[in-house]
Every structure is written in structure tokens, then in C-alpha cells.
Length: 211
Picture 1 (tube, one colour):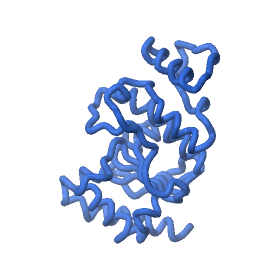
Picture 2 (cartoon, rainbow, N blue to C red; picture 1 turned 45 degrees about the vertical axis):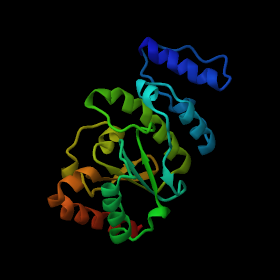
Picture 3 (spheres, rainbow, N blue to C red; picture 1 turned 90 degrees about the horizontal axis):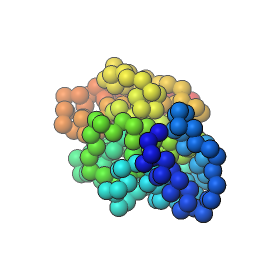
């Protein structure tokens, strides 16, 4: 763990009035999940005060997500802009026309909680750090289904599979079913894959109807 990350970790504790924490093992993998609060309200407060990585330095807005936080269906990307008109159109078709849910009845979130415009391939460590907030979030809510977009699946499962090869399949993840799909922005830019995605969504829909 780098010196800057230790200081950010301690500053986060200090912002909540905590004056003492356990000894930090520099050789131990940095995991914050077990230190996080067990209510959504307090978890959101942690996110708003987070300064654990350099992404927070250029971020004026942080969010756990939008929609019905107690929904059985979570859709999670890495840094998806769900407000983008093109992505929103693809998303609406997925949710309303295929899964037959109202958009407001599901929950949309990202592994990156900072609202930033773009990320690059060099911040894998930051994503792995920030995803602990999402993991704690689903520990609290326990949604039945988590639909991952693009590489969000690999970050959660800690592997490196081609999403196009596994899209539409079902995986056990804690108390939820993890259901990978291709990234919405990729689908918008590559419309030839749209029919494949709809077939994968039909598989997901059948799974939901059987349970």
C-alpha cells in the first residue's frame, strides 16, 4: 500500500471523528469492505467523503447509483453514463422492451462512484479499490440479480474472460445471480451486436421467470 493511500485512508476515518484504527499491515492486500457501515445511508456518507484514490481529486459529485435501491435487479457498469441520450435509449430498450420492467423499478450503478467523464486502462487498482463500496452495497441490499455491463463482470469475478463469450450466462455471486452483458456504449457504437445482446437478454428473462 502506498503512502498516499494510507494517508487518504486515515483522512477518511478522521472525517468521521475516528481517532484510532487498527495497525495497518503494509504487506496485506488493502480491503475496506469490512470497515464500511451496514446501512445504505451511512455508506452513502462514506462515499461522499471518500478520498482514497486520485480520482476523488477531480470529482465534484459522487453517487451510489440511481433508481430503486431496493430493487431485485441491479445493473452495474464501470463508469457508464446512464444519462447519455444514446446509452439511455439502449438501456430503455433493454429494460422495458425485453425484460419488461419499468426503468424506475431497477437500480443503476457503477463500480466507480466518482462521476468522471472518462477512465483509462492504468487505473485498475483504483477500480478494485472503489468496487468495495459496491460489494458492501449488495451485501446490505442483497439484490436477486446483478446485470454487469462490459468489463464490470471481470472486476467483480477477478478474472479475464471475453464478455462476448459469456454474455447471457448466469453465475453465483454471494447471494445474487451475476448476469454479464456487453457494454451499452459498445452496443451503440457496434449495432451489429444488438441482436446478439437481445438473445442474451431473452436468456436472462427466462431465468428470471423460472425462479
